[in-house]
Amino acid sequence: MKAIKNANLLPQEMTESMLHCKIMTIYHYLLLNNISIDYRLLYLLGVSDLLQFGVQKYNDTFLWFLNPYNIFCDKELMDVFHIELNKPDRIDINKIRECIDNNEILAIYYDGNIYVNREKRLFMRKKPIDSSSEDIYKSLVNNSSLGLIIGYDDAKECFVLNIIDQGGKNISIKYNTFLENKLYEEVYFLKLSKEADKNMDYEYMALKKLYEVSEEYLKQYEGYMINDEKKICGTLGCSSLLALKQELLQSIKLLEDDETREVVKERLCKKLDIMRLFFLKGSNTGFRKELAIALDYLGDIYNEDKLKKDGKAIKEIGNIWREFSRYLYNVNNNIYNKHPVKFISKLIGIIDELYKNEVQVFSSIKSNTKSMLN
Image (cartoon, rainbow, N blue to C red; front, side, top):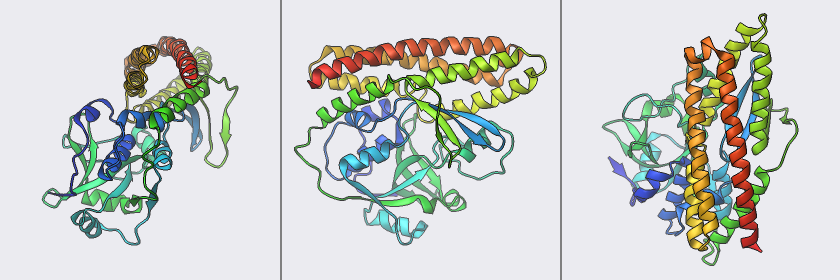
């Protein structure tokens, strides 16, 4: 295997605690350019939305999605650190090998949600869309993971990415997968447009960002915001939980009607399963565990026990989100099929618990950060 110089710079404590591919990638790029910043700050600097729920049209059906963190955090972080994405004039397997041989850094966008074997090679084969949730999900997701191509292995016919999986190993993309799925269209050079400001107070920026996102999370939105072009409508923050609960309550009414029960049960199963796939893209705790780690770090920096206490509360909420994601798995078995109303009622109970706890802790974070900023 051939790799770029200093390819394995990611600290072990990060790869064990903050498995967010975009944050991992931007942090790795900064390290390669001798820019020193704690990775826990990147999580806060990249956040803008803490929860998004909505519906997206697929054929004649409206499906649900649930995103527990800003899906555009890479763009947020690139703006903070003045990183540009530049499209190569020509890119193929030989060109990527050449770049790696010359220690040139390439980034690639890909879909990192589905793997095919224990070696964790990325599964990117396109298949005709059928009725399965997985295939529908793949048709809706647009290469939303980000990694650096840090090496290649001709013996195994794959590129190696900087992204560390939950088993502690680098993931890879097979050469034929790269070609079959036209991933060469998703490869970019990364470039610093100007030198990093050594006097920038990133801790203060993170504290201010934390206040702003907490304030935004607590706003109450009525109805959905609509994007006609993409046929998507949704809402943000704690209103996401209320919107999901309302959708589920309406579904219960239809499940209790003999004429609509079977059709609604099947459609609802699909909606919940696809929503689960969106939610699990990266974290089964809604990225609350990562937020807790960042809060604990910021509490140490400012010697503020209130932030550390908020971090502990967020970590506990992460456990509720884990319960939420695990419970959703049951939508594909008899727990749901035999008693759909009972299943949905319990899910609503979990959502109620999430809403109560999240509003409470983000109100505390908003209050604490506001007093620290003044």
